[in-house]
Length: 132
Image 1 (tube, rainbow, N blue to C red):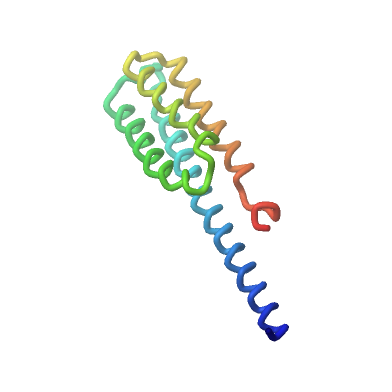
Image 2: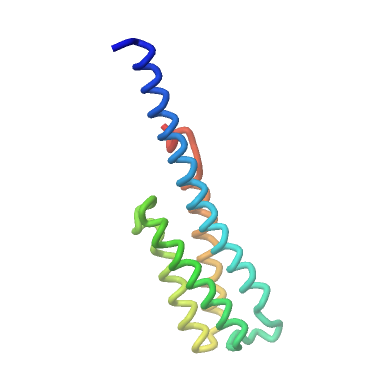
């Protein structure tokens, strides 16, 4: 085998691995950013009188849940499912708190989801360790 072919093969494989890693990072980051955006939208929609049990809030939480379920399926191929399941659990809790009009617990779950997405964005981001 010619030496240039070995180098070419090595750099081709390395380039493919780097490209896959970057694509994976973008998919996971975009999914988490969308969930975080929905959380901010829900936070802004909470009325000043503290009532959360209205049709707009139900629709926002349903949209958050739908977005999460759509992205969770694709992210499970790239990320360990046990690492990201807390967000789904908190969304389920939010729905039950919404049905019971428990504002304090609803806001606590919303803050936990924002915390999880923010934390996951930091440790699931692109780094030399992930690329190599």
